[in-house]
Image (cartoon, rainbow, N blue to C red):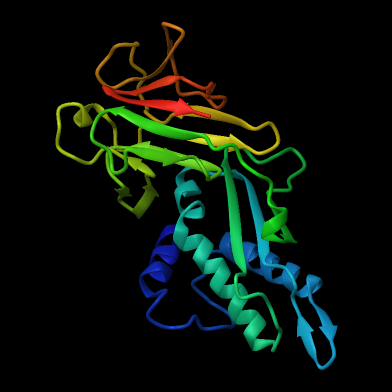
Length: 261
């Protein structure tokens, strides 16, 4: 079973019945590696207090680097985070281990090539109070009819497109956080998989990436570009993307949003 299909199957049954524990013959190998790494971290960080074990942390950070573009939407989805949270909670209950009621999992998935050191997966335990404060960056819609007039960029990856759920032949491919679904003349210039924004925690930068396969010149019907200080800067489809600056006017076709930080 493909990764996307596995997670979608999980998402449909998430609130219907508790997850079964033990081996899963249809589980994709990369998903099994992530799940086991998370559970190993939980085991390592637990300790005995009196007659019971305790896991004192309320936050698990999972960092995935070098994810294939076709799988990024799945790893960044709400269902995947909930899947890991459910797995951790179930494992702790089965072991009779005490843990915080507000325990949550945070997933950061970065697309691209794997790092040279080959370390594509990292898991760390911490507390939510230790989480680094993030800039209150946001997108404010100026032109076009989107699913929200304003979107906080509080995720490692934020996607933009014509619809919320994007399907391909193999099933759900990605979910757009900012979607221009209404049938309007402006919205029709936005592609289903138009662009995404990545947040770099180390540098504090937000970078805009063009997800369209065909670039268009600035001013075209379906291109991606930024208007900054009166200049139009085209965003080409490259691995580097373009760094966003406060006040940037971002054009997705004829839809316009303003980047505020």
